[in-house]
Amino acid sequence: MTKSSPTFILNYCIFLIAVGITGCSEKSAEETRPPLKAESHSPASLEEATPKPVVVTEKTRETYQWYCAQCHGIQGKGDGINARFLTVPPRNHTKAKYLETRTDEQFFEAIKFGGLSVGRAPCMPAWGNTLSDSTIHELVLYIRELCQCEAL
Ligand code: HEC
Image 1 (cartoon, rainbow, N blue to C red):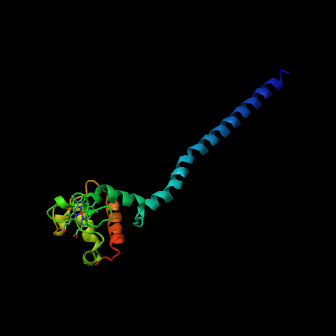
Image 2: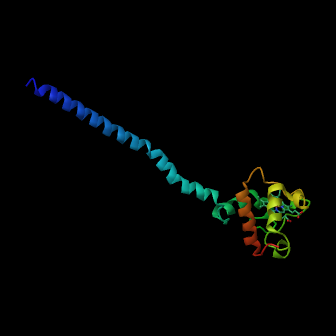
Image 3: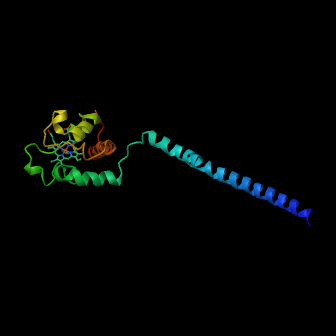
């Protein structure tokens, strides 16, 4: 009994150390998890870095109704409720004959910086502080959809 007791204690200590080591290794395995998680995020951030193709969504149409329709009209025909109060009539976004003489960059500039920036009337407001560049790109595409016409 007196002999087995120190052996038992020694064995118990080894057991504790072993548990301790396993415990530690488990912990360190957990510690390596966050970088793994970050790695799993990296393909997503890569996707974010690649420019998304511009598409007209329901949100784009809503944006047009919200910010543009009061002048350009619900269907984009230039007959919004404010149209008659403007000295220069809002552009009819369904009129291909004129719109195909303009580039998409001109549309983008007109929307972002206002009519004046593309040599048009200042009553076409600037939306650069309200709408993001990607939303403006979508609106340009939406206008191309309305006019069923190609850019110059
Ligand atoms: C306050 C009225 C008003 C609002 C609101 C408005 N526009 Fe206009 N917009 C005009 C007028 C007026 C013109 C015509 C300017 C001209 O022909 O000189 C115009 C012209 C344009 C043109 C054509 C520019 C060109 O090359 O002739 C585009 C594109 C355009 N608007 C897009 C938009 C979009 C997109 C919105 C909404 C985010 C919007 N507009 C909101 C009044 C408005």
